[in-house]
Image (cartoon, rainbow, N blue to C red; front, top):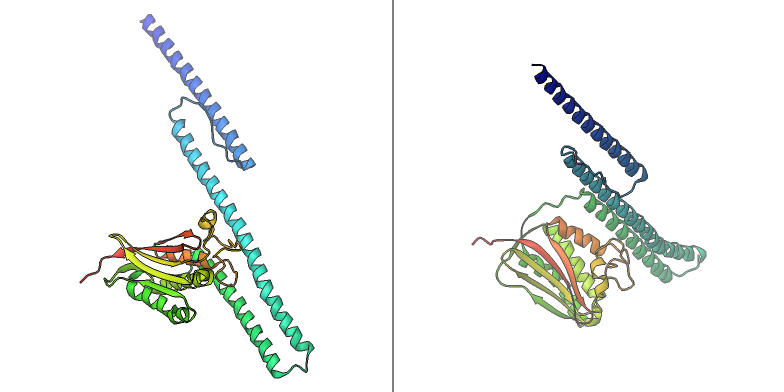
Length: 313
């Protein structure tokens, strides 16, 4: 009996010692985790928690903490990138607004300083003032359009749309002007009706932007085209030209806000740097994608991809 009791005491003692050591080890690990987290948060670093432990209860917690740290660090990086982009955009918009406003003030000053100016000259200057004022209004409208698209405030309801009709209407709106200037206009729209998931108003603006962009920046090639095609899942619209195009190094950046290389096609509205960005956001709002492929003076193609809907006969 005494021996059994002694053995029990020894066993209990061993258990207590083991539990005490486990407690001390866990306390040490928790203190290390606390201190490391405090250093990461205080220093704003991108470090991860590195704690070597055999504690099976702590291992999944450490993994979750590291996932959370990585998520927060990615969000912080995205926020910083967005903040820098917004600062650049505001700076560029301020510059782009200042230029036409300075011209407007110059015209007005000319009119004020010359009270004897004849009516015809005054009419010409006032016409230029009007044009520049409209240019400023267009820039401001684009800025707010982009802000509303990116914040989700602009509602773009989606429904079935008849792609043949929309594509034909938009390219034909430019047809007479283009042919009068000697452009070759190539329209490839199949007879078979093609339906897609999208928004008529948004797609009208996208196609109008892209065709106007092709004319303005691809005019040297004297050819503009629109092709409507499809596969089993998607409908594709290609708007193309044979102009100077975009260097391969810059093709991934033409849709960025305020990306304004000297030859960038993102300056499709009086140099505002928002035209193609708005176009991309409108396509994405229709659950589609847009991409560019360009070979200078051969073919520059903007391709819109939208979800196809089967045509019910």
